[in-house]
Length: 104
Image (cartoon, rainbow, N blue to C red; front, side, top):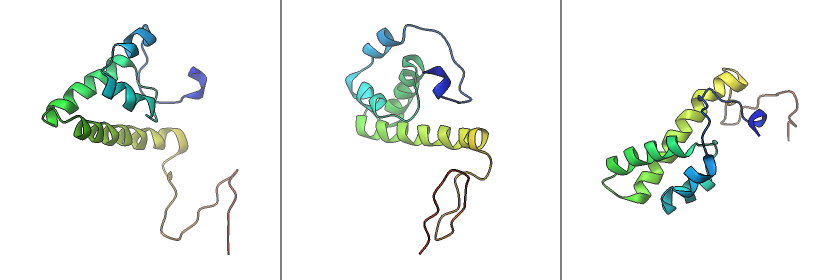
């Protein structure tokens, strides 16, 4: 699966399954639907920080995790797809190779 993910995030070897099994249930649920392939170590570190910033509120901490993940995706998007990604919105349509342009 490593070849399917292209990211600027550093990679380290660890026992991923055991680490993910040890995560708190709320965090495991969030990781299940996350867009990025989080390691147990890094997601636990950011969860602890988010939970502290949210005053112990798990829902607010998940919102902070969503925001952190969105920032990481935005940062990596320029490296992976180029500086013009995502395409402009608001009625403008960019034609990209391999996409179907729907016009009325």
